[in-house]
Image 1 (tube, rainbow, N blue to C red):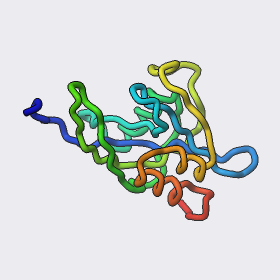
Image 2 (image 1 turned 90 degrees about the vertical axis):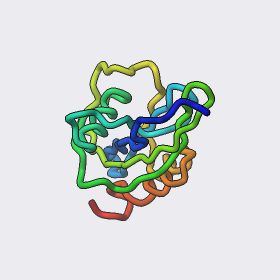
Image 3 (image 1 turned 120 degrees about the horizontal axis):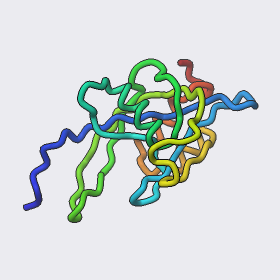
Image 4 (image 1 turned 180 degrees about the vertical axis):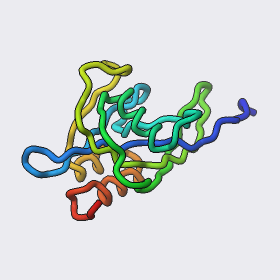
Amino acid sequence: MGKAKTRDATQFAAIPFAIGADGCPRVLLLTSRETRRWVIPKGWPIHGLKPREVAAREAFEEAGVLGSIVGNRVGSYHYCKQLPGDEDLLCRVNVFLLQVERQAEAWPEQGQRDIRWVAPAEAAEMVLEGGLSEILRRVVPGTGRGR
């Protein structure tokens, strides 16, 4: 039997978005460090921070974007996190929208991931998790659903 999991399997994530010069929304995706899949910034709970603060912090650390969380949690999805020793952990990810105000010149994980701004529909096609794809199609401002 594998090592006991004592960690809460809930993570918090941000969908960074901005309205482009053409008036159309764009979302930021980035690659995971291990599998190079297209994902959104996410991380484990941090003692003393609210879930929305964790989501915003992860967006900065992983993609260098700074902004404001808009509204409440917009949804959640599940994925299998690959752990050392060929173990998987089913994680629930609570998702928030982050309206990007600017991108920093330097950030902690700069150069460790690829980042790309794309239309929400394209982002929904790029991610592997069906639940995240649905959230991207449904909740990004400027795509038919109000804030």
